[in-house]
Image (tube, rainbow, N blue to C red):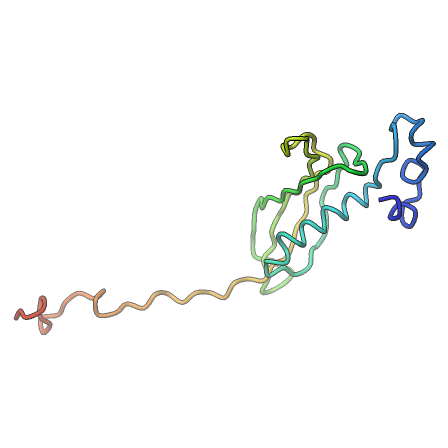
Length: 153
């Protein structure tokens, strides 16, 4: 967490334990972009790696709702809010998604929402499935077919 902040977001409340400890934060807090990186890793590991995912046209909303600290146990939830054919990318569908990151309490129950986002993702379309074939058992009997085994019409 601190190594990320030193490299990418070196603000005092992310990198200086003494200043952060004496501030209203009461200690070091994670960079919001570190928190987003944790969210993205969970999203890739648990959803995108199992889907026909393509790229994303971007975030529509990103909110940091509460600070994240070293040692926090976090959980991620992603909900599909809608899907449609992509007008910009033939062969892809656009999914509208919401994501939340929650701090877990001692009993593994969500304690506090720390991040909320709305975004879209592109996913490959499944090939169209052909209609099921109708076989003789689905057809109406003709005058030349028997009504059942060993019977005549």
